[in-house]
Image (tube, rainbow, N blue to C red; front, side, top):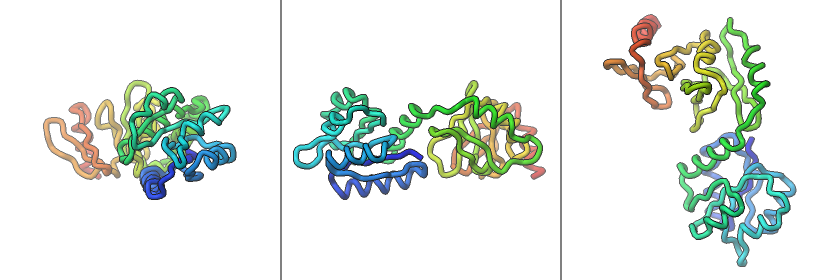
Length: 249
């Protein structure tokens, strides 16, 4: 879980912020919502958060910068959320991960959290390699280890909608998840891993879960619409075998 503190002095805005985070992310734990410098400093020392969403102009002339000046070691990421853009340079001075303007939109928040995941999303690659190598390729698997910022998540295989490969990495798109999980495996590795779980290669870049196909669209090469409404191309090299599979299923 990503442990988060929200610093916001207006209750209505704070409540809306909490609702938005809870709506978009199931791996973010909001530890506390603070509205003053002193409360935030106590909360940081007590909870050691991973990330702070920090308002700048607080009550009684206080500011979010006053909090950071009193923290001897900033070992958390900072995303400023403010109604004013005049503080951007000061935010950069404190090595802020991001700077978003209120009212915060779903797109802005998703982008900011994505940058946090990218920066902190390191895993033990040796541990991941061992787990992949130890997975049985005979019987169908019910779950698979996928990397997260904290290590590895075991997720149901049927939650994987499709995989998109690029070089030595693969992006796995899951149900109810806005952003993909990045695997340090090639698409061919994933194809071999999931070959008994209803996955099929339709393109040099796409491996799809057949159970998540909503529709096949005819055309020169064809397209499939997945359960997350993403449209994927079917390569000419894979089309005939893929259509034969669909007819038999």
